[in-house]
Amino acid sequence: MRKKFAVLISTYGEVEEPTIENLLPNSKRIIQMVTCQIATISKMLHHAIAGFRSVKRRKTWTKAGYQSRLNQINRQQMTLISQKIKPCLNTLDEPVDVDFFEAYYFVPPYLEDVVRQVNNNGYDEVIIISMLPIESAFSCGVACKIVMEELTEPYLLNTHVVGSLWRDEQLVKIFTEHVFSKVRQTNFYYPKEKTGLILAAHGTLVRDGNGNEPPVPTGLKQTFEFFDLIKREILTDSRNCFQDVKLGCLNHKFGGEWTHETMELAMQEFQVAGVENLALFPFGFFADNSEVDFEAKKNLQKSNFQNTLYIECVNDSEPFAMWLAEKIISKIQMVQNLRRFTEAVGQKA
Image 1 (tube, rainbow, N blue to C red):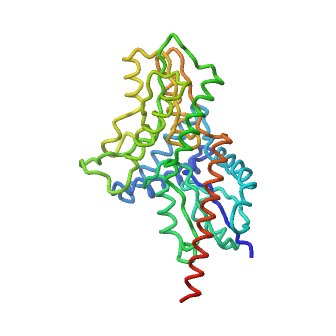
Image 2 (tube, rainbow, N blue to C red):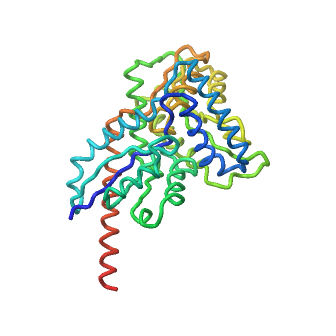
Image 3 (cartoon, rainbow, N blue to C red):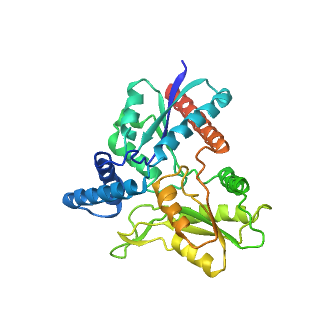
């Protein structure tokens, strides 16, 4: 009998309509699933922070006329990946049926609800793809935390979380090609002037307010390693037009000491070095979200550089979708191999 696989394309998720009704439960889940991993927060303070965050975000986004595209992009990527995977299915040892679903950590449809839904609908295996390249307790770790805390044993046995996607030379090449493709399309060439590139990623807490290291994996080391790989690939490419490539972390303001290598520091260093033109690419994300196509992009546009270029994430990149489709095929094959092995062991016992 053909096995049925459900593939969940999952990410943080952001509210699409910035109303208090949408923002408040979103803020509460973020604090519960992320902030509470690194700080002890009372129930009263939890509600107060969530309310403050929701009101502030509603005011900021509404005033700017901004609406997050993250969920929309995630859906588009899911559709593209599902198209790319079809011709790959015949490479599997055993034929399978594969269906795709969107799922989010912080907005509906919630990840745990989608996992239960597909299990109740008769799917044999569930593969969760964390659409964030760098693993930490705040990215694919959130998916793992949801699975471990919210799902009972029957669901746990057939649920597989795929993260740590940055550890792949092909992804580095896809990102590099994406950068130079956008430079070419926008004609962002200034041969007689200095041009810099900032690779942006989410910052992370280095030490809490008491000077202690965070009690959970933050992805700090992985962020630097991934940055170094892409920087080296860009600077050694024959098409390189950048004098230098710097890391630009997007930090929060509270909680303790955050990553030192900020976007603001990178811009300052480029200005001191006499760089006239600046490009920004969010390598720490697979899809544009409010932190990059609103906040980081706004900071770039307000800067004093003569010319600036915001390079979107690999939102609609076909090579990226093909790469991820092949990753999913590899995971399905691994699951098939595991099931055959356990069945063989069971028959011998």
